[in-house]
Amino acid sequence: GLPIPGSAIAIASYILFIDFFFDGQVFPRFILALVFIVSVLMVSNVRYEVLTNFSLNGGSKEKLKLIGLIIFGVLVVIYPQALIFPALMVYIFSGMLKTALLKTNGHRPEISRKKKPREDEPDNAKEENA
Image (cartoon, rainbow, N blue to C red; front, side, top):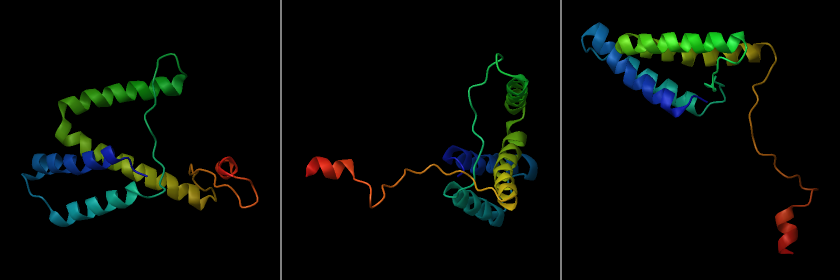
């Protein structure tokens, strides 16, 4: 699901965004919908990309990601009120879109779960106590 810091930053950056572009009008219905959507996404099976360790020693895709991240970071420092909220909306909707496309193509997102022992397999904990 959606990482908790991403949800928190989305809600906080909405306030900055609204203050910058709409002179502090809050739009309570929108913020209520935003809180509901990010809350549902936090407990959903929607997969989101995570930032990994970038290096210039990686392939060209890694280098482009690093350069894009640096450029975006500089722009966010210059215009935080204008860029953080829209960037997080792109991130949130990209995960939803990716999951929807995978499901329509017949792929199921991988969910990491612990394998439950079957009834016919011996349980090590039970054997030790016996």
